Image (tube, rainbow, N blue to C red; front, side, top):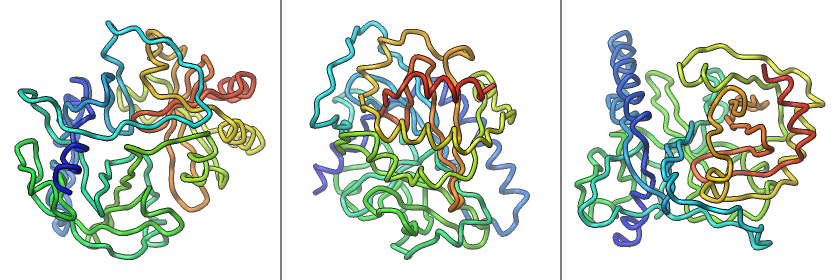
Length: 313
C-alpha cells in the first residue's frame, strides 16, 4: 500500500502566488493563536503551508483558486466522452524535483486535501459525525515510503478527524479541535471519474440553497471582504439545475482555450451557503464555465450563467 499511496501524494504544483499568500496566512494564524490561550490546534502554520506539486502537466493550488502556468503547452477542448472525465491521481514528482506539502492527510488509502468549503461556526457541532481518529505529525516532502503508508499520516500535525453528517466519507471529512471549535473541511476527489455535473451537485448538496454571495477577482486576490449578496432563490436554483445538467471537463482541457481570463471582467468567485451551514465556493467564468476544486470545470447553459453573472457585481 505504501507505494500506491506515495505515488498519489505530490501531483499538485502550486504557484508562487499561493506560497506568498500562505506566508501571510501563517502570520495571521500565529497572531490568532496568541489571542487564544486555549487554542490547541498547534499546527495551523503547517496546515496553511502549501507549495509546489503537479497534476498531469497543469498547475493548480488547493481548492480555493488556481493558476494556469503551463501556457507554453497548447491544448484543444476535447469532445466530451460520455464515460466522463477522470481526475488525475496525486503522485510524487519525478526524481530530482522537490515539493512542499499542501494540507492533507491519509485515511483508508485515500488522500484528503483541504477544501475551499467552509462551515459556519454555529453549525459545526451539528455536522460533526463519528470520530475516526487523529492525524499524525511530520509528513513532509522528505518522508519515506513507510511514513506515507501510515493511517492518518498528515502534513497538518495532530488534530482529530471526523466524518461529516450527511456526506459520504469517501468524499468529505473534517478536522475539529474541541477546545477552540476550529474546523476544516477536507475532500478526496483525486483519481475519481466524474460523468456529469449532477455528481458534484449531489456530493456537495447544492440543491439545499439558503443564499449566495459573490466578489470580484481583484477583491478575492487582495483578500478584501467585499461581497455582493444574491438572494434570488429562483435564480440560484436555476443555476444549480444548469450545473446539474452540465458537462465536466478537466482543467487542462479548458484553461489554455480561455487564455488570460483571471480578471474582474471574466472571472468571479461565487459562494453558495447551504441550509446545513456549509459554504461552497465555486468560480464562474463569463464564457460559460464553472470550476470547482483543483481539476474540474463544468460547461453550463450560457443564458442561465449570464442571468446570474449580471447579479454578481
